[in-house]
Length: 483
Image (cartoon, one colour):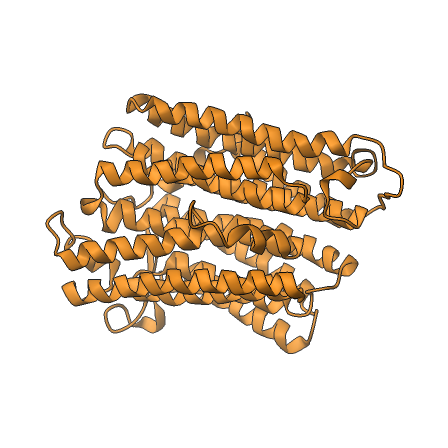
């Protein structure tokens, strides 16, 4: 399908175009253009998903020159699902950001062009069909994300951005070294070419490449104990930036871990390695939840919650046994999408509370429940998804993972998920309880623009709707799955 309106190339080109135009318009301008363009990107992603449900996986030769001479874009069900998540999160957040920066201008000057480049990098990463192009998109994504962390200026944001830059460069460097070893062993970086070549008795260089690439991606995903950069970066950035980073950017590297572990390096993946990844996920859930529970700053609580929720994503790997691979895969990706929507909503709601109170301090949230009921309800709805309660998509995801754990006889993961859900409830109710207390002497709660409340609510509602009507997504995920 090579028509001019093919969604594959436009999903990469469109955010590049509007990001560049926003830069040329000047500091702080381009919000309306971005909102319209992201809405169009969402329509293109929906069109792509519909095409794939009807006709299977898609590919596109850029400029008419396919690999190995040119560049191919390729999309299966997993890529299409991540594209949908990206545009579905970005659109409400763009609306939210326009209102947020009107109230708190710090950081607005370069937000729109950098966001355009970040979305272009995300879309290109999901559609890349070879290991080197993935590296290029990883670098672009990392640099855009670091730029967004630093846009507010000040000592703490710049320090967090530098720490983030170090982490993303180390991760990308390890990944690139692995790509070089793969190319040296097989003379290709095409995923389609490499898939039948990698076998259990692969050369030592290939096994080393797999380790380096996966470690680099785990660092960029902030899986425990590689999470050191995430809380200051997500907790110190402006609320729209924190939401983008937590909902989307860490999902990109997780997507690549799934792609490599379950496909390219599947012959090299051993049950012991899968259990080790699961143990790191378990440690993330417990460590992140405990630190979220002990925070005094609202955004740091939400940031440590991200550390914890990332751990659930990596339960996919020990649960993906030959008998339970499909349900574990669907549950893990559903969890990524549920977390993306809910965490974007939670950061947006937290940002509204900070605008209303003038402080990022949980002890000063008294009166928020009365003055901002929709914002607090949004925070609670997002918490329901993180806890894994019905009817949210978090419940659907955890149910699939629980089924995989029971069917494979791995009961310890069942206990972990139940315990993690209780810890999530504890730190969510810590915020809700404080917000329902009266306004303390010396504090104040001022109204916020309604657009902030309703755009955050739309994200939390989407996480619940996905739980009620998630069957088409599960069907989409199985499109193009490799045996």
